[in-house]
Image (cartoon, rainbow, N blue to C red; front, side):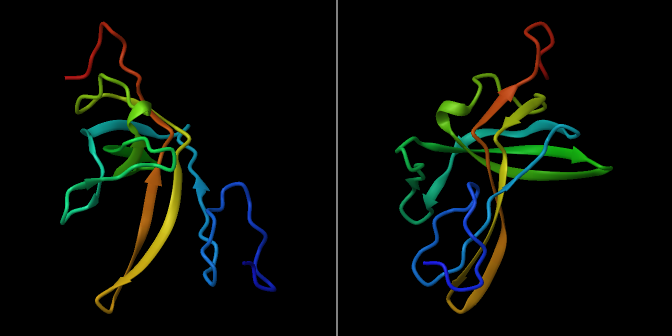
Length: 137
């Protein structure tokens, strides 16, 4: 429920539970970045205690791909959640990739009295840019 003075939801806004504020999903422009696989895809774990694998809203298994994201003389390693159906088969370490539909979403939670916050990254697809004759080592 929006309160007076809250900004209206946009197409990038996640539905907010009753009594909470809207968290924004921010589209990320990757056109000027160099992106390479730092760690190949692995299942995204929803609950570390039980080993439960995370699923998206459509019931598709989510994977995590760590990428090296280089832009503006800065390099970061980002962990990106991607539906299993959106991952190329040939994502070895060092493979240059394209990130389709990359969004950043700020998050925060409180557990055992400690507040934590960060930015979660999600993409529709991670696709290899390596040509068949020049695979990354």
